[in-house]
Image 1: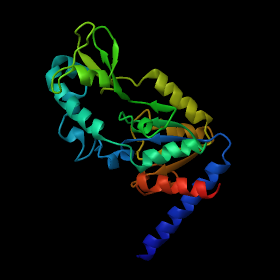
Image 2 (image 1 turned 45 degrees about the horizontal axis):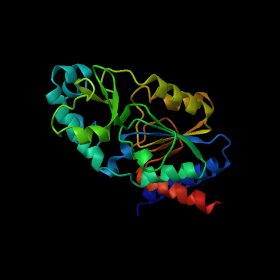
Image 3 (image 1 turned 30 degrees about the vertical axis):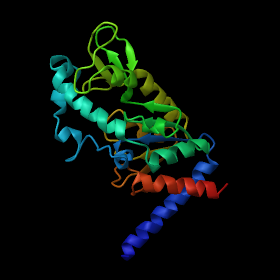
Image 4 (image 1 turned 45 degrees about the vertical axis):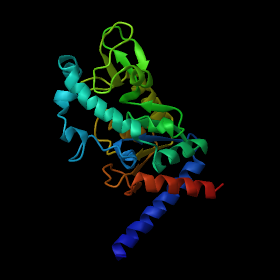
Length: 259
């Protein structure tokens, strides 16, 4: 091993040990902020980047409400493809580790920018979904809400799903480009960050607002900010530049060994 790599590894281990000790001693607990990177090893590609969904589907043509209303058949082509990817995905070791951190009492709330619901499938509770959820759809006409499972039973994959009550077009309850984030979710996220001792930023660059403001809010409120990401971006020394699916299970192991 290169001496510099060995030094980096030791530094990362020290940071992981420090995080475990800090969480165990914390009075108010930690909040996890997660993003697309946490679900990559569940075979959900990031939306951005050369392999992302937006490399094949221009979001201005496929990911706005205006586009959905103008050409629902075209937009639902992309939405059904995305649905198939999300439906096949399963929680990976990072999601499972975060659920264990909640069970251990050191993490209170998860704030996620993902719409895949894998945190809930892993067993996590108190999950704030900033960008909405794939689990429900709403009618653009009468605003009736139905579950994704109901729609899957009633609709033919590839066709535009319709409301059983009024015949109106359905939309997934995720945030489209140009839409505001759900006010209730944003309020819950801010309150959770204000109450925590530590914010763990996992699998996200946290560069897109309003999620980008949460680490700054945490620091203003006196919380420590930790970043677990292969390519760190935040101005913090508390960072572990490794994949979250490797780091978070190791964190759980350290906490259990301290019990």
